[in-house]
Image (cartoon, rainbow, N blue to C red; front, top):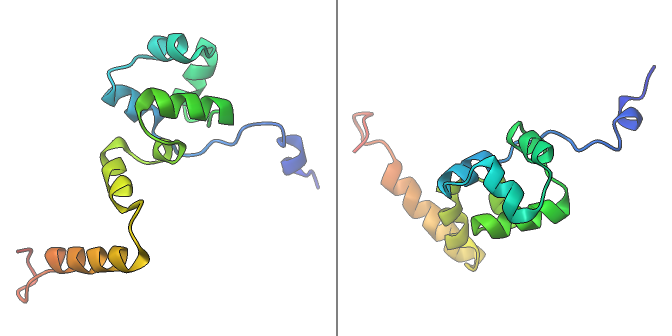
Length: 113
């Protein structure tokens, strides 16, 4: 049996990230990213196809988009929520989640509101 892990060990795995959405949010085209962070245009194109950048480029992309590395793996619309909870205690987070659950629960008739 062929061990595919060893065959592909040197390749960057394809994972879900939101680089394309972050670029769109910042009105940046692939050529802008190439110019701003000094990456090869073929490399940037592969990122837009889903390949995960290496660490050095993750840092540069995060700085360019105004987020952190973890933010690149969240949709830009969701980034505010992560920032909101970042410095909160576990108890504060649990209270906020409980409040949100109450806010979004269905009423007794089974409809929202």
